[in-house]
Length: 141
Picture 1 (cartoon, rainbow, N blue to C red):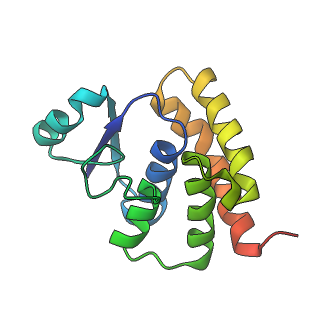
Picture 2 (cartoon, rainbow, N blue to C red):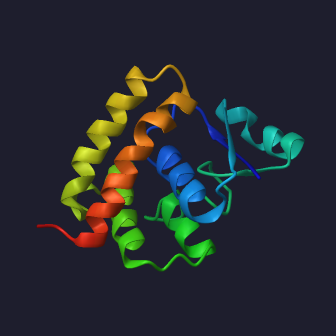
Picture 3 (tube, helix red, strand yellow):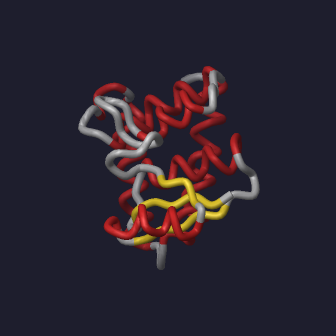
């Protein structure tokens, strides 16, 4: 399946592809386009749009797109829920909700700057999410 979102990803637009590939659609293909091209690209490519205004898999109130994926796909793993709180904190102005959110925001911002494009950014950041997920499974020390 194809998935499409805005380019220049930082937190949610990398966390969601990680979640999709690890728990929803292992063969997923991701397209990153200009914000004003997301919906046209979704129609043309038969892709699911995410993390853009007005879509099901986007921000709703205080919840970020990662939360929307957890709900839609009924992912109830407590570690994913804990990771979701970290992602929400890093992706919104609510960094106080998880102390790890500050670090994730910093790391994601740095990777966005050093990556050549969003595909490389995903490759660089997926191990961060693998590690955070493992951390959430075992709990803070």
